[in-house]
Amino acid sequence: MKILITGVCGFVGSHLAMTLREAQQDWQLFGVDNFIRPGSESNREALRQGGVKLFYGDVRCSSDVDALPKVDWVIDAAANPSVLAGVDGKSSSRQVVEHNLSGTINLLEYCRRHGAGFLLLSTSRVYSIPPLASLPVKTSEDGNRFVLSAKEAAALFQAGLSEHGVSETFSTQPPVSLYGATKLASEMLALEYSETFGFPVWINRCGVLAGAGQFGRPDQGILAYWINSYLRRQPLKFIGFGGTGHQVRDAFHPRDLTPLLIQQMNAVSPSEKQRPRIVNLGGGLSNTFSLAELHAWCAQRFGFAHPVAADPQPRVFDIPWMVMDDALAEHVWGWQPRTSLEEILAEIASHAEDSPNWLELSAPL
Image 1 (tube, rainbow, N blue to C red):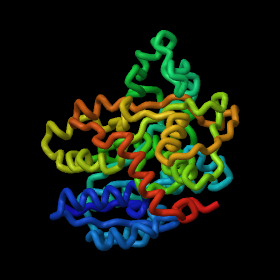
Image 2: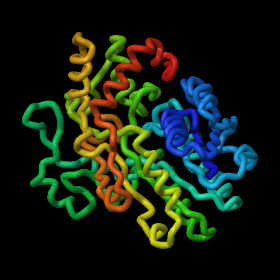
Image 3: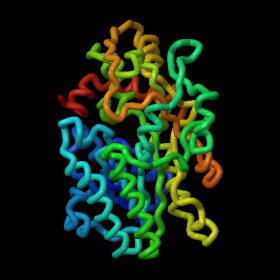
């Protein structure tokens, strides 16, 4: 089997390449990257030594995609993955659309020509922001995080929300952010191409992905950013929701994607092809954290207190509580995250201790 991974030198793409290499040593792995993301160059040599054939190219450029070798499956891990993309002044709205939608169209055309299957790594950010931003939450008994206020949230339990989190049936009505909209449009186009041209497509909506070597930016790698910043005594701030740091997300490690992707690429029987095309993937309730809890974890790990500022005003698209309900993935594929939150945090902290310049390398100001 021949596999092409886009964004292969990014955090997620590089982990997928190396774990696929370990799990399927007889598969041929190819990767393409445009290396515009600071820190991506640091993964090039390890991938090369791991037997991944690397190509320089930009998926936004159709001629670059046309020049790639024929493969059996494309894993699309290339994206501008920030919910603030296009509105934060660091990238334009057109760049977001080109990265996340035009690139997908070029890859779908590639799959159409070669009859290759397509695996899209999508995002939890396809879900509608207004109902998420207004979720009824209250402060937990220990005072460190938000929890759903079950009585008030009960009305939403028939709309894709439960005590286990947000499921695939939750609303995807706009607004979802420019980032979310481009990924949702990519999902729809992928499914249409699959039906029209007869190649397989699987869509995996991922929550927060985290682990050692993640590029440290608050809008794209909050765990790596916070741990590295705490260790270096860089300024930190709780933003929004009263400046308490009580907002909650769940996280999982990208290597936990690999067993699922292998299953999806091997799902060739008629019954397997009838499985749901879209599933949520996340850390679930057992891998949830608030910023306040993360800050306290850093104090315990590093052995010193680091002050944190507070800004009570939320930013655009901020939400107080977001946990991915991955029950469908477990039912259909037997998938569950394997790496605990404690293991993820410890791995990031060890990497931060060993890489004193990581923030400057991966997230230059």
